[in-house]
Length: 429
Image (cartoon, rainbow, N blue to C red):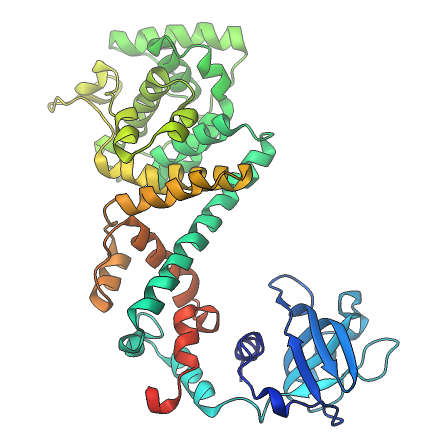
C-alpha cells in the first residue's frame, strides 16, 4: 500500500461513507475532506469531520500505518497540533499528540475497493511508455479532452513561475523581464544562461536610449557579450569595437567574458553572433516590444514584428572576419518564431492577464496556442502513436505537461485519466 493511493481515496471519497468509524467505534461523517496540502504539514487542511456527536474543523493526516505518526515525529511538531483525525490503512498502534488524548484514528483497510487497489498496482508496475498505455482505449474522448485542457493551464501556470519571480526582482518592470527572457530563448538551451547574463549587463532601458541607431545597439550588445576584443580585419567589427570602447567609458559598462558563449555543435544559423544581431534588429525596429505583443491581435501580426533581417554584414557571415560562401539575409525562422511564441509570448500574456485581472489576455494566449501548428518532437510522435494525432500547439503543450509532470512520475492518483481508470469496476476493465 502506498500513501499516495490513500490520499487519492480520501480526496475523492473512494470509500463507503456509511461504514466509517474510529478505532474506538465512534461513527465518522466526512462533511468535507479538507484542502489537499502539497507543502509541509498535514496532508489535508481545514477539513470538517463529525466524530460521534461532535463536529470538528481542523486538519487530517494520512499514513499507511498509525505508527508512522511517531516515526515522522509529528507528536512534537506544532504544525500538527490542529490535526483532528488520523486516517490510516492499518491501525497498528494509537497515535497521540502533545497535550491531548490519543488522536481519533480511522482505518481504511476494509473500506477500499479491491478493484481500485488492483488497478493502481497495475498502473504502478506497468513499464510501458506511460503507465495507462494498455488501458487507453477505456478513456473516452470527453475525459481525454477535458484533461488536456486542464494540462495546458497547468503548464502555463508552471511556466509563469519563473516570470513571476523575475518580475518581483525587477519591481514589476514587464518590458525588462520580457526582454531578458525573449533574449534567453533566442539563444535556445545551449546559450540561454549566456543571453541572460548579457541582458543583466545590458539593461533594456539603456538600449532604448540608443534604439534609433541600429549600429549603436549592435555595438552595445556585441561589446557587452565580450565579442569585440582583439584585432579585426573587417571594417564592420572594427567600427563596432571603436563605438563600444567609447560607450563603455561613457556608461561605465562591464562586458561579460567571451568564453561564456557556445558555438560547438550548433548550426551556423543558431550561432550566438547571429542571434545577437537579430536581437539588435528587433530592438531597433520595435519600441517597447512587450506592448506591441499585448496589442497584437493575431499570430500574423506577431510574425511581422520578427520579420526584419539582421545587418547586411551577416548575410555572408556567421562570425566576425569569417566570410561564408552562402549569402542569405538572416531572419528568424518560422520554427524559432513559433518556439518564442509558445515559450515566451504566450506565458507572458497569460501571466499579464492573471496579474492585471484581464482575462482577455489569458484567452488570447490560449487562442494563439490553438492557432499554431503542433510541435514536432519525439514525445509528441510517441503520443501520436498511442492516441489520435495532436492538431495544434495547445494540444502538444498539454501532452508535454502530461508526460513530464504526471506520467513519468507515475502520478496516476493525481491525474484525471488515472482517476477515471481507478474508479472503474474490474468488470469494466
